[in-house]
Length: 407
Image (cartoon, rainbow, N blue to C red; front, side):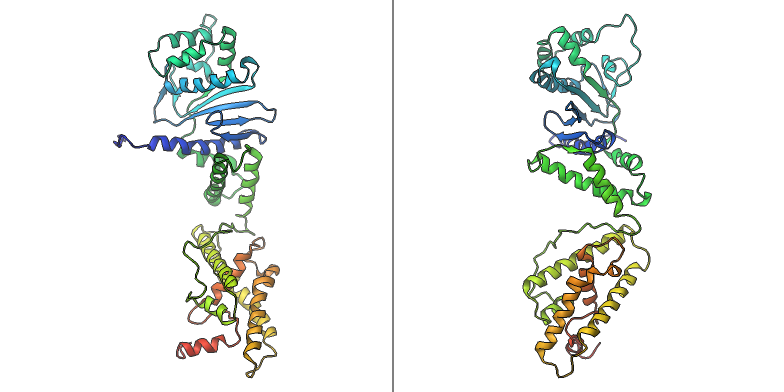
């Protein structure tokens, strides 16, 4: 496919590089020992810190397809420039640093950079030393980008040059950004059912990006450890088992303003009818929103068994009916309005605070998030023209009158 011309001010490639950093960091932490910690944009693109305190500075390069890395590729020497500064700062030969370049490019077979590959070709007895190759290469450049690097490199003694170069490794042909999700799912999600791996990856990456943002903005100062990713992945995977469902709307609220006084939905009218405070009605609106949106996500991701929601609503309605009969038992047609409202409050309080303690009223055994049950009762209370549940003992009669006897 031919390259599509882009505006000279476009920053698409640069933006892709920034997104590549956290995504590749996620993959690397899953591949490395769990006590490895990562920090982004500290001493290099990635700082990978081992449990013994040794550190790898990793420079990441997401390049065009078929890009080659040659002797004087500026990508390599720009990374060397960063590494030289850190190497000198940390005591040169006594430092505990190693330097990795992770690039989607491939090292040219004719380049001396092949000597930095993890599995280099066997070196012949008459091959030039690595320091000599680096010195010769740098002596040939006229690049205003590379000349200062050569000057900084030549400030090292010969033994320091050799020590510095031996710390470098180039991992060419590294995964491209679009290939990383598949690698994570295939290699690190064997315990997750195949049909749910994409959803689990999205959950994991969403948490990961949020964690990295906190790190970059200073809200989180420490490195993120591999075991934290393992724990989070395990937690997400548990939500996709047969007795559980993922909870993704905890803490979420509607985008629009919440109007407790003029909201015309039936479940809100019901709450106003039993005299609930504005704050409690607001909480109910949020529960309704979370439960409704959560059900939509479950349906889109095909996580629900056929008839599962209908069975759940039947169980909720049946239990509501039993408790309603107890609460309304001693009411009569002559009961005072205050007694009717008190009874409605008692029934609603049971649904809000007590029903969730009953294990049989969970949609699945391990789904204990309160908004699922509370919001589901509001969904039932919102069904038109006749709600499946109600709180005020005479609400159906009032509704019948308001609708001109149409229910």
